[in-house]
Length: 262
Image (cartoon, rainbow, N blue to C red; front, side, top):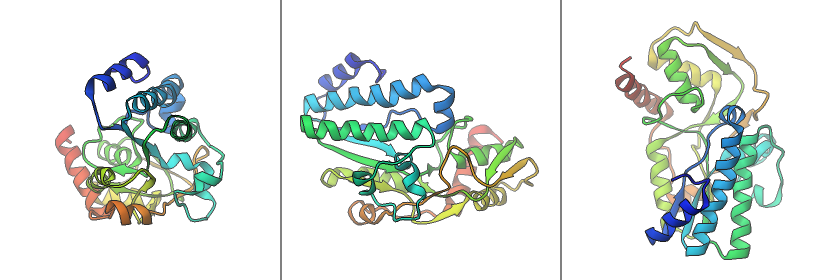
């Protein structure tokens, strides 16, 4: 179905008799949102509204895939980035993708107040691993690995810092949401690296000389540092880094070699 079309969403929820809906259907990424802005807004805002309305009407619990991007510039203030910051502060945004994820959360809060919606918000921070097929709009780990293996140009914003959570650790925490009351959670790794460090880690695993790489300090349309407080998710969802970034990159490289026969 197309979540932008209300009756398709309504019929799917009505027929299914579901207890829970995981809403993971979103347009992803800043550059994707700039190149396909109509899809970004229609999917992330109108589509999310349709899912919210259908869940509220049928009393279905909603698990919403938000993003670290919802924090906007609050992520770069040097203060503790805990879940409650967005309850009391309104961020400024560097790109429209960020704004649509924040808007989705606000739509949920309206439905919680006005329609009694049961909903949990999960803010994902840089999830990576096998299964992410390459395109120019995918996440940075996927981009770095594929382009390094193919010898394609890579731009590295050296001083930008991010945390990276392996897909298996992400999936375990997201599944465990069903066992706790509605809340908001940061879903992220406790460890962070600069993009400079990440690029060198990828190069070491791929085994390629990094000759087609452009190095820049920071990115104009994004925040420099984005590192989450995950105490609540660790305590209630069992979130942990059982797979190190080094091991996760190795597994992802192996999967890409098999998938693309590189």
